[in-house]
Each structure stands twice: as C-alpha cells, then as structure tokens.
Image (cartoon, rainbow, N blue to C red):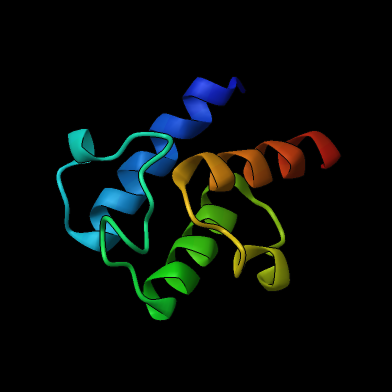
Length: 82
C-alpha cells in the first residue's frame, strides 16, 4: 500500500471522526490546532486507524501525533513491520 493510499484512507477516517470536509485536511493540517481535535478524538482516530489497517496501536506514540502526515508515517511503519 502506498503512502498516498494510506493518506486518503486516513483522511476519510479523520473527516468522519472530526465531522469536517475531507478537502480541508492536508498532510500538514494540525489536527489539534486547526481542526480542534481533542484527546478523545485522537484516541478514536488511533483506534479507527488500527482497525482499518489491522495494526496494534501504540498509544504512547499516538499521543505525539499532530498532523495526518504523522499518522500516515506511523501506519506506514506498522504496515511494513507487520
């Protein structure tokens, strides 16, 4: 799976969880500052990402995520590791 494919799937998840238009989300969009994601939203995104890509979520790493590019990198690393 390419980085672009992962990004598009994550963007759809993020848009659904945060109730925003997917076109408003770029790889560099700060999920917390720009989209006002709170800690519960971030946990929900982490769990949904784990489910979508069949990955085990490392919540310690997930707490440092700021952008969708960060999430994409973590998922990509998990997909390669699995």
